[in-house]
Length: 183
Image 1: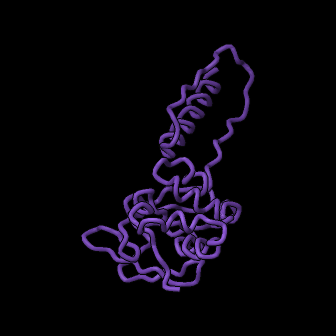
Image 2 (image 1 turned 30 degrees about the vertical axis):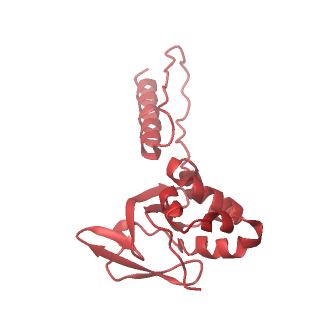
């Protein structure tokens, strides 16, 4: 009986920690059923991939639309690992008028893909791995510049406002600007 109670408490703790860490869903209530007597294995909740992390954020609906329009959802749901510097809706809104609408058109798919892959780095690069003056190569082919001043991390001048949002296939860092490649 004590084993069952411990297993249920462990399952509740793991589920609660997962939901709190993701912070993208309404709180859920877990009800224990004491009349269940047989022992069942505790299955950990599967982590969301980096696309699901973005989908779960109300601040990244424009990014999700752009990733979908570029046909990159399947790629970014792949094994990875990937590091994504994810611009917020406000970052996209700060672009010149009509830019986002133009990029979301089917005829702009190549340009959109170029911009989006400039926000993705191969490998799982956590905030602690970033160093001032570091250059990181993107999937697009160009490099991003890392700067750290007074503990504040910036990527190509965009502030990292939230770091190390872990997914099952990589990590997401929220940035307050859209990173634009040179080519």
